[in-house]
Image 1 (spheres, one colour):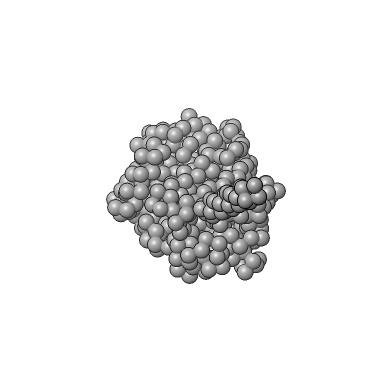
Image 2 (tube, rainbow, N blue to C red):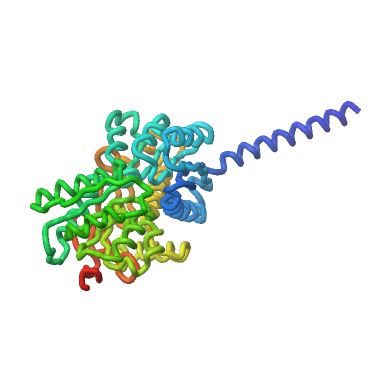
Length: 411
């Protein structure tokens, strides 16, 4: 009887040990990455664009055997509208509680995210592109050495937009420009950069308006614009709703002005709402990939796959978010341990990554400044699609596409 009881006890203990071993093995069988993106609120559209690039990269890695023999598991967090307390909750949840091995955040704020994720050593990839975020990094580069900015600063992008506008093969009727930007740091950086550069070139900034998000009635501003009759109108609002309503109201009685939307032309919702009506608008995508034609065969294959998956052209955020995941995974594979953050961060900074368009290297302040592997791409809407006109740096015409004078100027 005692032998039987002992056998039963040994069997139970063995079963428990096997179960515990299996549970530990299962826990170690995945590599978790945190993805804090706006899933609700005003920025949910751009959050979805980043999400598509991130999941495309993760699916590719998992379908090809995973990373270090493990599957990548995504842990999501809704960053909503990037209130500092919400961003901090996300960092504590993903890095503190879930123990993720990397964080891929897309656009994540204006510096509150740097502070939140800088408390941890986990590599953090964001698409902030605003001086306040970079300034937090500059305040303590050693503390924030795990932070990577996947886009150039607003000032550098503003200078690139200026280069595009001044190089248009078009005889401007006058030297007057109207600038409209949002009341956040991004919009003001771009607006001030454009104003300074156009003034230096001898142009008159006839109006410079800073507006809040959510503005849908453009009547008073458009009345002023119609009196000024500027050669260029630049609207820098990183939200689809405002730029769509501006165009719809502008086009009822348009001035003979080049309409430049900067980053605001690239959110998916803009062209899905305006379609071919938007033909003629100028815009840009930082850290983008030009299309029509693609830069090379690898890029064409990637763009074809993206279109097959999501049934639309490439919007802002998707490609650079994809690249962020792939360059992190490359570093992990080289280091051989997803949690050796010091070695992974060192590899990313020193070795960079061979991307689809060329080498990608983080520069000053861990920022992905415009470069061949991640250029600033300038577009014009033609036939309802974004056609690349130029890439920067170095600033150069792209792909044989030609600028078309907008129809509201021809009339």
